[in-house]
Amino acid sequence: MRRLEGKVALVTGAGQGIGKATAVKMAREGARVVFNDIFDERLRQAEADIQALGGDVLAVKADMTRQHQVEGFVARALDRFGQIDVLVNNVGGTYASTKRFLHELEDADWHNTLDLNLTSNFLATRAALPHMRKRGSGKIINVASLAAVMGEPLIWSPPYAAAKAAVLGLTRQLAIEQGPYGITVNAIAQADVLTERTLEHLAGTSWPETYDEMMKRFTHYPLGRLAQPEEIANVIFFLATDGANFMNGETVLVSGGVWFG
Image 1 (cartoon, rainbow, N blue to C red):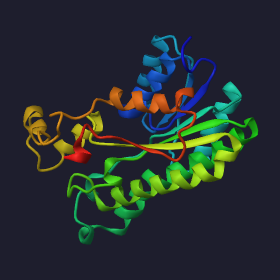
Image 2 (cartoon, rainbow, N blue to C red):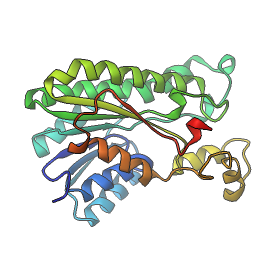
Image 3 (tube, rainbow, N blue to C red):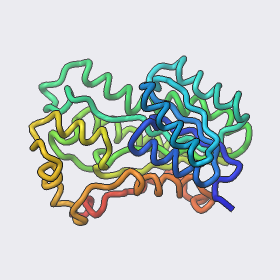
Image 4 (tube, rainbow, N blue to C red):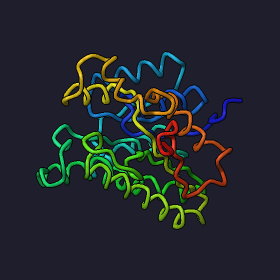
């Protein structure tokens, strides 16, 4: 039997990258998947890819930093499937304008990054929790970043690091609050991942232009490479299964050894 058979999983920001890999993994394991993106083309392509696997999927165009759109996203999931078993708060990222030192940032750089990486998490979790509490079960997985626990100038950014660290604090607080209602809340903190967005960011900075030259920047990683989205999705998937039932308030580092380097 597939490990998420009969479950409904909400994955935010799943048009590409870690989110898409997670949605695909959960669909393969039997979950009915609801996901969002803000770009039509990515949304429809991801939907088609999951349907091609035989997955039961609902794709919703929604901006997870906007309260009414988040509430609409959750409402559509409930209308379609009637339950929420898993919530993966994956939406996040950095803006090119934030790849600067703190004293060079504009107010908008700070607020927009916190909205994308922290407020989106708050809004989605708040919308889903009442339904999980009513059912007496649920798993929430927050996708943070290694930036929450270590710094790397001009690779990550001050507002991004601050927001992701706050996600870890929120994870621990919610674990205490919601544990008595059968809901576990955990987080992952991953190192850099070879996603479309990563390559876009690297190409937009002073990094070398070719892929091979870009990758040379990561030779200090003990494994000598970046993570693949599927490798991160596998960890998120585990946290959504019964195998992680006694994990609550935990942060799982998925760093390829960078954390210890």
